[in-house]
Length: 166
Image (cartoon, rainbow, N blue to C red; front, side):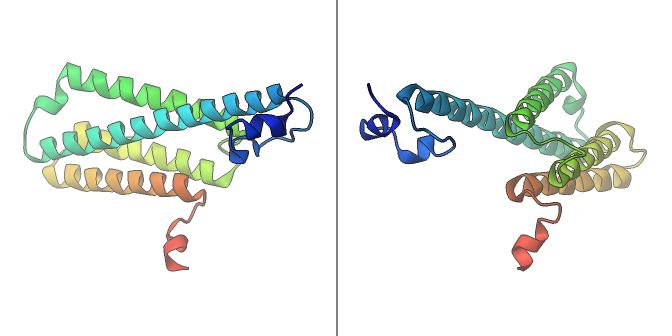
């Protein structure tokens, strides 16, 4: 019978199995590897759609500032909604996999609150701002919120600037 240590000797790295206590059978290690692959896949999807969402908002905001109207077309709005929906779904799956939840874990709560601010500022920037100055300031504020959200996610703290000041 092949043990987990034998499985590791056949090519899997110890890092691949460090998240579980493997004493009995190589199938335990395979389960851990499959779970880690799922987490890696979810993270990749989530980060990719974060990049698409923020980049898309930046480009649409820039087009708005240049007085273009293409950013208001149905295809652009639909693409944005699809990207943001996939982003939200991947976030929910990630939260469930790491067993951390908004309003329980501080850093995740900060992300949700900042996300609501980002959405509100984005709506003012792209739709409801009465003047160019209001739209610009809302767009800039939304980009700052997006930066904050990314930093909170990377450092898992509600005050990510402390990482740079320490």
